[in-house]
Image 1 (cartoon, helix red, strand yellow):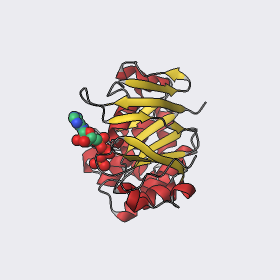
Image 2: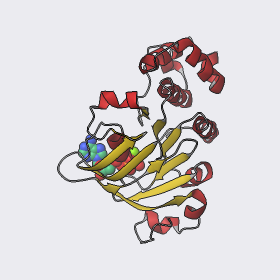
Image 3: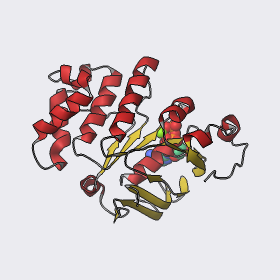
Image 4: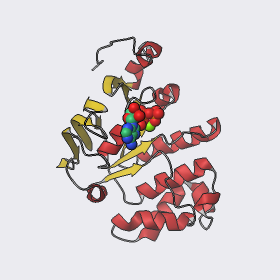
Length: 240
Ligand SMILES: Nc1ncnc2c1ncn2[C@@H]1O[C@H](COP(=O)(O)OP(=O)(O)OP(=O)(O)O)[C@@H](O)[C@H]1O
Ligand SMILES: [Mg+2]
């Protein structure tokens, strides 16, 4: 069973579902990316995964444990970490303090884990005493990711980790995302930029109007008529 397995997840904010019948698997060592037009339900799916929204139907399994009905605060303990789209660091705390807070789920020595993370994110190591609010937007996003990794999650969900970043820093963040997948973690990314998603992901799902319109390997997906799909004109079947 993959580290993350979802089956028929339907969720929304009121009685009307925003996402319907979503089944996504994410495996350790791989980057699984959700793309799709604005308002397609990508962030809603991320929120349903991590317990912020309770699904109306379907199941979410993390390492074979059913977390669907668990209170949100218990879910990280089962190996699922989440980095929201905005406001993802404590701006008045230092880089190191942000990481220490992220380490609360992880039993053991947080300083050893922080040292490991500073090897992966050398810019954060250099700025470890700096207030997080004084970092660039890109570095704040990396800090948020590093904080989530403190708990050694088996699955990390990143909602638009490159939103608002310069092209150069976008590449830096994507390189880190690829590297995280090698740390015994399944990475689920929500991304706006289709080209980047296809370049850096192993597996891609395209959400359109709350449905998983099509999914497949990045190579398969890049063969499709993506502009038509994004405009809702194509009814391509799943490539799998
Ligand atoms: N808190 C909320 N309450 C009610 N409706 C919401 C809420 N958040 C989002 N929605 C609605 O749910 C739909 C899907 O939004 P969602 O944020 O999941 O889309 P998205 O694919 O992440 O879009 P984007 O690419 O703009 O981030 C939209 O119609 C949006 O208006
Ligand atoms: Mg979103």
